[in-house]
Length: 287
Image (tube, rainbow, N blue to C red; front, side, top):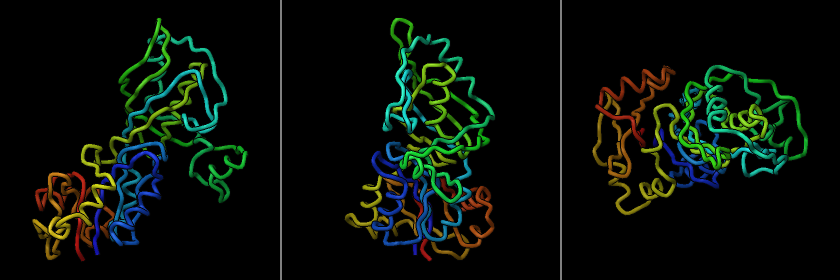
């Protein structure tokens, strides 16, 4: 039985559940869970827990996340991103200075109303199921925190801005689609998100994330057993099988008694120190 966390690079077109289903097929393990939903059109970091490591799913979900988002001014949709039905189109007359000021005004603690197209449940029903049925219900604002917004780029012509790219560091439960929508509402012209990349979730970064095809190669490619079993290490009395390769690196070493403490940060710190590991992408432990 393999236990551990895989830092998956979720590609566009896959739901988070699709990734879990694919990994079950690749690893032949049923006990797998992801640590935070990414929309189908979004890409980037999706840490996935396998085996005993699924006990860490809730704690990983709580971690700070970072995104890079692109949004377009002058348009709104029912999903708050470009995949949805267009609701309004407005003429844009926003200067770069006005847009920058508005974007940065969203830094800090605030209340955010979640979108109808989300997996949040109200009275036992998921909001996106209600939305697809043409129903809209009242949603209570939720407390979030945006600790940082970096403006990467603003597209302007004749001093009128139409699009922006931002990097956002935020708390659990923050909808970047809604942030883009709210920026447009505050400006009075509307806005919709056109692209989203999750670049970090907790300590898992996009630079060390693995695509499903890379993971499949590790498990089923040539010399797969050697890849998984090479460079064995030991933590206490537990034998670990750690894959170390230029394509995939070691991440968090988990042992049963450490997981049971429910002290995720301490688990990472102590175990990483014991075996001199960096926090990167892929760890396996054999029971």
